Image (tube, rainbow, N blue to C red):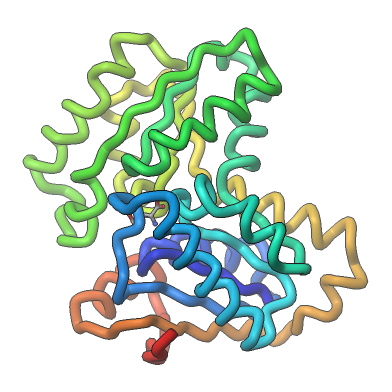
Length: 261
Ligand code: DGL
């Protein structure tokens, strides 16, 4: 099984991308809805939560681990790799590889939670591959609650998106990485505000493609992952609101099973 975890429900955008690219493989999802958001927490706390999330999925039979959450990917990946002996995928590197291969990409913008942007991980990875690129990060802390509120088309959201993107617009970026699980749901609005000429990279799609490539190169691993195309969803807290949001992201999520870590 492919185990995917996130701080909550936003990681279902990663599951959505995985289901599109790898519809036959079985997925186990854990959303830490009781402790969400991670993006406003310190690295130490996010690392502790990420280790518990990963432990849960591996105990339940995950043979591959996907860190669907950008915040956890930014601060906890190294610690997870030290601790767990399964292939671990995070959302940052695949998006970075796409950004550096953009022919017109000389100026890259990254939007994400405060923890992701403060970690500087996207910048480090981009500069390691392309020192000539200019990288600009912008934390957008209000976007997660707006998406969770379902305000995907509201004027208020549009104005806040515009305000957050303004500094990146002034830098005349030509590539923009959506470095947060929730932002793909605002992709059209973000594209409209940043301008048509800016190439938007959705980190969930980039990640899903890299898992697909890995399984293509490791057929033995792929054949052990289960091919019934099942998806099981676990959360650490269940509310009607989260169930509704989950259905907005992924049409059918079945029952969200409540577990205590
Ligand atoms: N999943 C988080 C991320 O991608 C967003 C929500 C949160 O702050 O926990 O960074």
